[in-house]
Image 1 (cartoon, rainbow, N blue to C red):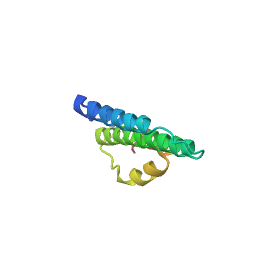
Image 2 (image 1 turned 45 degrees about the vertical axis):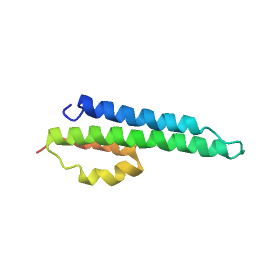
Image 3 (image 1 turned 135 degrees about the vertical axis):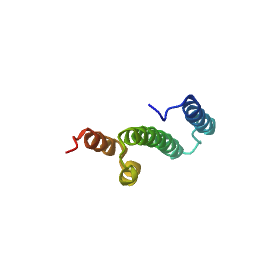
Image 4 (image 1 turned 90 degrees about the horizontal axis):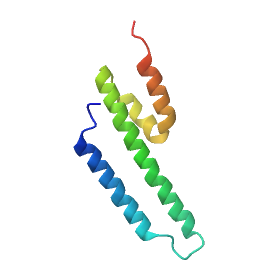
Length: 96
């Protein structure tokens, strides 16, 4: 894969590690609803990581195949996994 340079991977992993460290350092507060807030932040952090990971992979695949990725950006943000499945199907389509 052309896009996955060592510098990019190390940068993304470092950013994720820093975010996880900040997340863990904050920890749940003493309020009963704090656990829900803490869990929601964890889910959002993982969702953002998933969207970035899939986005970079889709960019790489579209670039290799000479396709335009602009149509896929908005659906990717709101529903990454179904968009990924549709993207893979669209990339496998034979050209006439």
